[in-house]
Amino acid sequence: MIKMHLRPTECKDLPHGELLPMTRIHFTYRHIDGPWGGANNFIRALHQHLREVGRFELVQSLDEPCDILFMNQLGTGPGGHGAMVPLRKIKRLLELDASKGERRRLVVRAVNLNWHAFPIGLTNLTRGWWIDRQTIKLLNMADVAIFQSAYQFAFFQRAGYQGRNSVVIHNGADTTYWRVPVQSPALGDKLQ
Image (cartoon, rainbow, N blue to C red; front, top):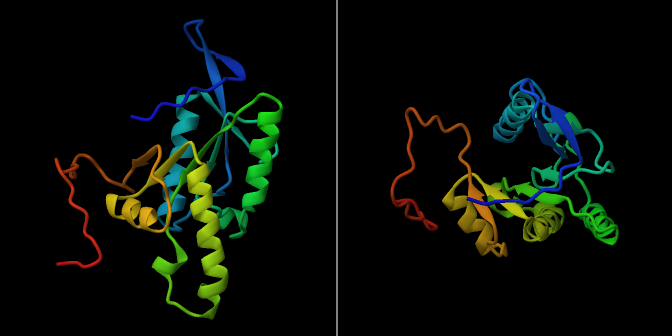
């Protein structure tokens, strides 16, 4: 279990008169309500859960102060028109926080690397390689990295991820029908 110690910024009244700290969280990935794939579904479900819990304030702008910056790699998703958040902007935000004695926690959900997901071509050798390098740097800066499987974690390690503070959260795994095996062997490069 990974624990992050947060510095709550506000409090919210609960029905029993208790006060719980509010945690401010910003998602760089903008989900849509329709189908769009695993990342969209994961982040949409997380948004819904955070609203139900009621202890989280969803911050709309990347430039606003927050306790947690949640990223789905560098992409902004279908609601963000597929734009990329520049890694230098994230570095500047974290450095600015540090200069003020503050610290937002960086949580990154790893999805894929271009060299692994797309055919090799001139574009993938140049732009894809650059995006992959930026992604690995972002993961190595993260306080927590989330992977979809042990296999995915392993290929990110082979690409340069240092493997600190990571967790595997499977997409859409209904525990009524699926359970984590006692030991999960890595597949390696070949399926047998």
